Length: 61
Image 1 (cartoon, rainbow, N blue to C red):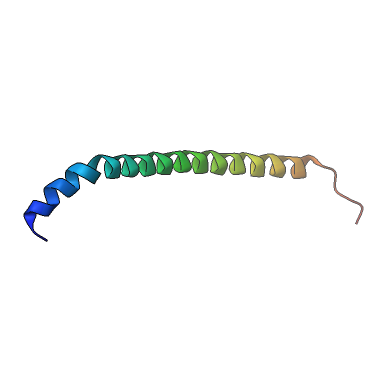
Image 2 (tube, rainbow, N blue to C red; image 1 turned 60 degrees about the horizontal axis):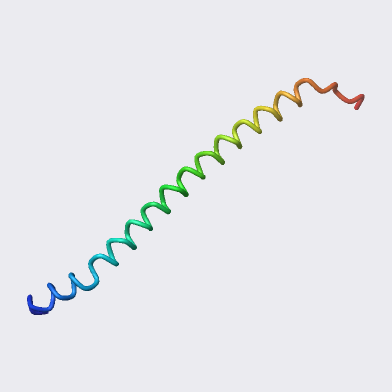
């Protein structure tokens, strides 16, 4: 491709492409934060379940 094509292409579509990549990056950050919270909640629920099982009386079987 000739160099004379790159400058108009970049100036015309550059800001939109930059915005799309920024939005994708922000979306990835939000997904990572959500995943971290869900993992933490899973650990807490597993610990609570373990504590409840340890404290429940055993069956007669």
